[in-house]
Amino acid sequence: MIQSDDQMMLAQECVANLRRILLEARQVHSRQDYARMAQPILLEVQQREQEILEYLSGDLEQPVAS
Image 1 (tube, rainbow, N blue to C red):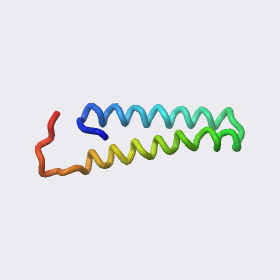
Image 2: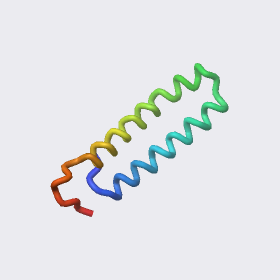
Image 3: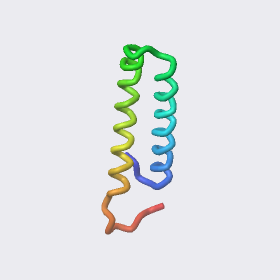
């Protein structure tokens, strides 16, 4: 769970790194190998993006702690 702006920025960097890995893997692996390899990474990307969205859309009436 993301609790600060710094953690959110780190999560965004992690998502970007995972996407780069997937893009590079698409170029060197067969479709079947890529599908097997990518599945857990795509799930990780999805989970981290959900956490980022939850953090950004959190209780906007509360003061934001930095």
